[in-house]
Amino acid sequence: MKLTLKIWRQENANAKGKMVTYPIDGVEGDMSFLEMLDVLNEELINKGEEPVEFDHDCREGICGACSLQINGEPHGPDKLVTTCQLHMRSFKDGDTIVIEPFRAKAFPVVKDLIVDRGAFDRIQQAGGYVSVNTSGNTIDANSIPVNKHDADDSFAAATCIGCGACVAACKNASAMLFTSAKVSQYALLPQGQVEATERVQNMVRQMDLEGFGNCSNTGACEIECPKGISLENIARMNREYMSATSKG
Amino acid sequence: MGGLIKSSVAKKFAMALSGLFLVLFLAQHFTINFTSVIAPDTFNELSHFMGTNFLVQAILQPVLIFGVCFHFIMGFVLEIHNRKARAISYVKYNGSANSSWMSRNMIYSGAVILAFLALHFYDFWVPELVHKYVQSHPEDPTRYYEETIAKFESPVRTGLYVISFIFLMLHLLHGFASSFQSVGWNNKYSKGIQGFTKAFAIIIPLGFIFIAVFHYINNL
Image (tube, rainbow over all chains, first blue to last red; front, side):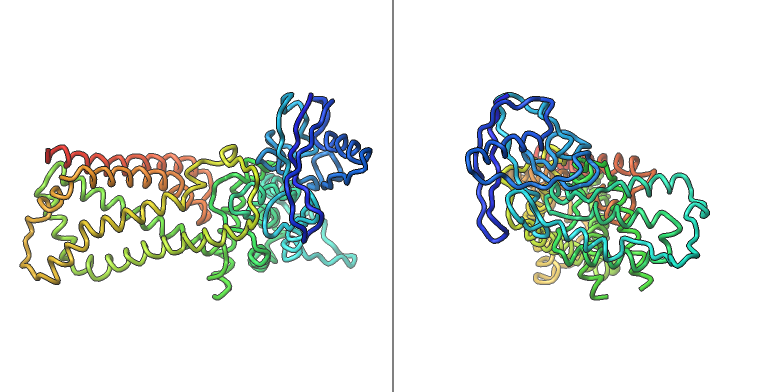
C-alpha cells in the first residue's frame, strides 16, 4: 500500500522541530509499524538523508522502549499493543499517518521521535523497590502466604512496562497510572508493607517534582495502556497516600 | 504539611471532597425548589427557614460559599498546572478515542456554571441581601414564591438557566463519579456508584430545567 507519513523531525533537544511529509510505497499489511519505519529509513539513507530516529528494543511488546504517538494516540489505533506490535494492516492504502513523539514537559525530546523518559526511572528509584538483606539469610518470598486476589492484582500492576503511553494519552500529561502501578505492586504484598508509608509519599513527591500534570480521571491512560493497567491502581495510590500522610 | 498542600494527590482529594459537598447542596437546593412546583406554601416555609435560621445563615452559608470558591479556584489552579505539563501540544490528538467529551472539558463546563452562578446571585442572592440588610424590610414568610416565579417571566433568563443546567449535567456526568475515584473509592461497589452518579447527573439538572420552564409557561 501507499501511505503518506507526517513525521516530527527535530535535530536535537534544543532545536526547533517541525513536521516533515514522506510518501512511502510498497508497505505490506504484515509489516509491523517499526518495520515500516525501517523501510522508510533505508530509503532516506539511500538518498543520503538523515534517518528518522525512534526508540525500540525488544520488538516483542515487553520492553516499553517504542513510544510513538500515531494519529493522535499512543501506540496507534489498536488497543493493548505497543507500537512494535502494531501492524500495518490496521491502516488503509492512501492513508496519511501522523507520527509524533510522546509529548510531556517531563519527557523532553532528545531527537526526532525519541524522548527522555528518565523521569520514570527517578520515580521508580524514589521508592519502587523492597529493601531486602541479601547477605545470605534472605527469606524465600514464596514462604509468605499471599491472598490469591492480591497476588493477581499485584502481578497485573507489575506488568506495567513503563512505556509512557499513559502520560502521552492523558490530556494533562499525568503519570498517575504509571506511579500507581508501581506503588500498587508492592502495596498489595506483605513484603511491601514495611516501607509502604515512605514509598507512596516519596514516589508521589518525585512524580510532582518531574512536572507531570494532575489526574482528572478521564480514563484515557487505562484505554491506551498496552498492558491494560487498571484505574483501580490510581484509587489505591490515592488511598495509600492519604493514609500515609495522616501517619506523618 | 507543606508537602501535603503541594501534592497533586492531596489537591485532587480536596477537589473531590469539595465537589461531593456541592453535590449534597445541589440535592438539597433541588428538593426545596421542586416544592415551588407542587406546594407553593411549603416552598415559602422552607425558603423562610433557610433565609432566617441562624445555623443555616451563620454556619452553613459561609461553609457553602467557601466550598464554591474553593472548588472554582482549585479547578483553575489545576487546569493551569495541567496545561504547563504539556508545553508543546500534539499536531494531532485523538482524545475522543479514549475519553469522554465531558471528562476532557470540565474546565469549560465549570466556567459556564461559574458564569451562571454570577447570574443566579444577581437574580436571587443580591436582592435578598438588599431586602434584608439594606432596606431592612420586616420578615414576610409569604414573599418567596412570588419573587421566585417573577424571575422566570423572561424567556432570555429562562433560556440561560436551561443552557446552564445542561452544562451542569455535563459537569456532573464526569465530576460526580470521578470524585469517588479521587478519594480512593474504586471497589466492587463502583459500578453501582457510577450508575447512581449518572442518574443523579441527569435527573437533577433535568429537574431544575423542568422547574424553570414550568414557571415560565405558568407566567405566560
